[in-house]
Length: 213
Image (cartoon, helix red, strand yellow):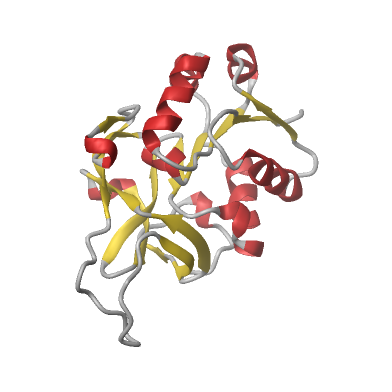
C-alpha cells in the first residue's frame, strides 16, 4: 500500500523538504499541496514553515488548509518542522503576539541572550544559524537509529516552550537548554531542519514515515 504524504504548501522551504522525504522513502507518494482534498486523502502530513509565524498562520488560514490539518491531527501522523513546530502551540510572542493552532499547550519565545558569551568569548548571535547537538530527553520512535547527541541544522530566533515537560523529546543548548523537538500522540515536530541535516535528518524523516502511533 502506497504511503501518501502531503507537504503543506504556502509555508516556505517546500522543495527541500519534499526532496528529503523522497530520498528517505523513495517508495512513498510525496505531494506538495494546500488543497483540502489532498490533505484529507493523505496518510500523513508534514507541516514546514519559514520566516514569521504570523505569515505562516495567515497562509494556512487563507488557503483553507488549517481546517483540513485540524481534521488530520485527530487520527493521522503529523510532523511540524521549524516554524511548523512553533505553529502547533498556543501562541508566539513574535509580532507582539501571534495565535497558533493550539494543538500543544505552551508559548513560542525569543532567545534572550544579550550579554551572554560563548565558550570562545564571542557573543551569542540571534538567530541561531548552524549545526547544534540534540539531546534526546526521552525515547520516541522518531529517534530510532539516531545517536543521542547527533548534530542537526538550525536557523531560528524563536523556540517553543511547552507547558508540559512530557511533550519535550529533544533539547539543544544555545545560551541554555531549550526544547527543540516535541511529541504527543500522533504529533511530532522539530525546531531544526531534518532536510538540511544530512544522514541523521533523513533517518528522522524515514522514522516519521514508518511511524505507527
